[in-house]
Length: 180
Image 1 (cartoon, one colour):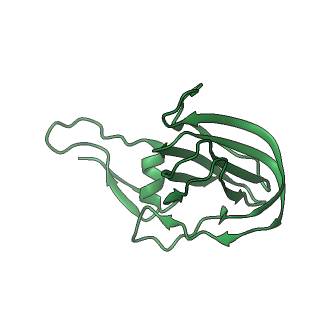
Image 2 (cartoon, rainbow, N blue to C red):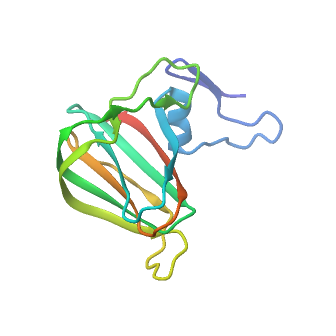
C-alpha cells in the first residue's frame, strides 16, 4: 500500500480493499489543508420594496489567489449583482468567516464586510434574479462556477429585494485560497 506525505497531511493513495486510486477535488483538498473558508447567513427583509443589502470583499495584494463561489436562495423576488472595483465611504461591519477545517488555525487573506456604505458599485460582472414573482428573468440562485478575483481589488455584492412583502434571503459565500 502506497502512502505519501503532503505537508503535514498524511494520506493514502490507494483504497486498502479495492486497491483503487482515491482522489478528492482540489477544493476538497484545500479544506484538508486548512485553506477553505465560508460565511453563511440569512437576511430578513421587511415589507418595503427595493430594500438593499451590501456585502464587500477585498482581495489581498499578495500572490494568494481566491477561488470564490456564492449561492443565494430567496423566499421573495430578488436581484443580485457582483461588482468589481467600486468604492465605499465606510467598510461596514467586519464579517466573521470560518475555516472549513475546524482544526486549522489558518485565517483567510480575503477580508469581508456586511453593510458597507457604497459610493460607487464599480463594474457589474455578474447578475442574477431569483425568487418567485411576476417577472423573473434569468433565474439563477447560485454562481455555478468559480471566480478567481483580481488581487488587491474590492468586490461589492448587491442584494436587492424587488417586491413589497416580507421574506428571507439565504446567503452562502465560500472560497479557498492558494498561492501561485
